[in-house]
Length: 188
Length: 149
Image (tube, rainbow over all chains, first blue to last red):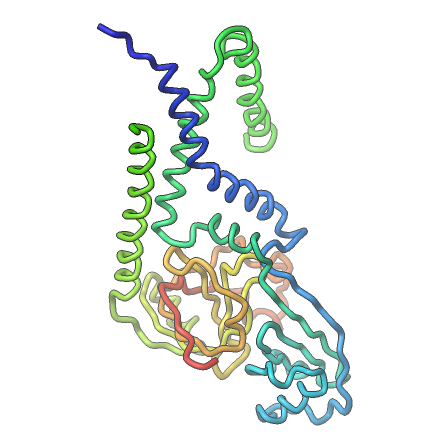
């Protein structure tokens, strides 16, 4: 009876899974770095803020009409992008614009215009990383399973001194010890 | 050829699973009859109806800029804002919906104590007792639609 050539099949699986999951690996790794640092750098949106000042702020009173707010927005070049408005506080008017908003102090007339645009490429990557649909959860589960298979098959690709019986063993143990040390320090 | 077939089968599995579950999600989001409620009455109603399905209408005043995982809506009273959380049915809210009036359908859930800012919890004076010093509730969004741009 012919012996099952498991090492050959590990190579085949490792190679083909490597090709097949190349795209998903990049999606999750790039967005993973981006999301790790989301508090330092917003990878989802480009936000541009600009200070503005409106003359004669006393005209901004509760009950101000949409047309009157549109006229205010005309003064900062945003009349056409007006969407809606409300007063979050008695001395504060927030105006929603297409692609942003402006908050105005009704006593001083000073305000902050904020324009928000999607950051291309990263926004899409992050969207996928967040598991946007149940169906995508299945895909990411398959990907996670594939990573396990890639990790296991990867251990046995090389024979000899640089394989899992030699240098590979030390590196594998090191890779396992690093999270264990972290757990001992921070978790237990 | 065998290898190609293997890869092709995997690819087909991906896409069929995707299509089947996309339909399933839509069906689940539409099921059940919701209690229609206003943002002003939401917190009181929520305290005795955790897990209940509600439909609520309000203007979106904020969408989280980091991940779009939550947004806030108000009705007539800007003090009575309601937090809407993304879910596995609606995974993200885009900032473009700020300023739009939306109708949200979703399930009432309590807001975890740890997400209430420490600064707010530490404040015990009467001016601040109205908002964070009692249990707060949010809505896990099953679906939402824009009714006024």
